[in-house]
Image (tube, rainbow, N blue to C red):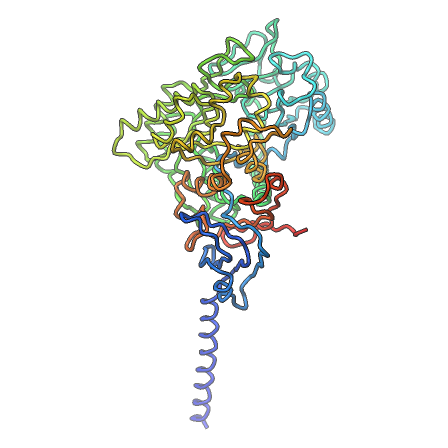
Length: 577
């Protein structure tokens, strides 16, 4: 009896083991996710176009024909029939402000206002809901985009009196669309201790009327006179409230990123504390977009002391990288802070602001190259760009043993013809934003005149033809993170009123896709793991309703994101119409 039982038990064990082995074998031989029947533009070196992709875990397993890839479908495989849809690598926004995208949605969204009176009404409504002493914050206004112009105005800016009368009990700070100027009311100036005798700081300007009275506008480094007091107010909150607001802002940002097919971003400036916070999020799988962030530390001593402990590549399963430093050499065109070699055409005698002393810029270059960090410098005006290129070249020449540095100029918007070839010659990446071109176009000629606008403004074609690499972003929240509008700007240079802004500088469709994917990965030293659709790379994928390589120009703005896939997981899906 015992012998028969033992034989029976042995047979059962053999059968069960075979079933388990068979099941495991099927699981190992099948994909977690398969997309098939599509036009899959891999953007690899051969520009291979496939029909299907198989994903295993967070990685692209195989890519090829629908017939071949469908053989990898198992009973637990998630399947997407693309029905001919267009597929590319996830968009990589190579320059934005990570927390700022969500923070902007927690403030008054002033880009919606078409004139100054509408902004006053928006602030008045907010003040009626606010407690006395509570700061009212907004972002997105741009004086060049209002109709009619404010009256009275100074240098095109409104004057604060009307706003101050409407909000006597609350300090108000409204940030310019560029981020390089703020507009405040009397209450905010009083809290900051600003009066008619307050001097403009170096690299900044308190805009005043003909009588020397502050208008309420603070440009470039003068912003800090206000933001220092605002930060006191914000830092007085409990740690729990501060963390809660940060998490809320990030959640709102993730929703925007996924909605527009963005799987990777480069943040244009974080503190050491910010990075510690992001590491904690990565540890608990709470980062929902791949984040490459630049260190923005104004104190050179602090930067030099701590930098070696903050070099990070692919932390948290490739969700966090830190290996670059952010600096500013000038301001923005909209606030007339961009640094030029000749006067602004609409403000004679003014050439912009040098917001960081050259000696400090050179010190940052030394720290970066000695610690193996990439340097990323905000430069918009032609003189700002020339100075940055000179500083970079000097650093490269002092360290000929240092190669593959991939230092970047952030924006590179307005260049001297002489300096265009230097990007390719020096190996400097031009980190540019397509949407800035068509957004700024209505006032560029007023600021610079037609010659400088034609020869040096957003010269993508000239840079590419001279051998430079351009990576593309939005600078959000300065502009929307809308990837489709940004792509449309790159390939058409058409403004909202359907005029072309020097169309000879357009990118081709393929160049624009590369600028928005693999070039961004290259600019963050991550081209080996993302930026193209190839076996072994991260399964960051976006499915679109239109073929961005073939569709008519007018169809591009109507393109929808059908799926955003991050690490093999669907994080956004829209219903097809």
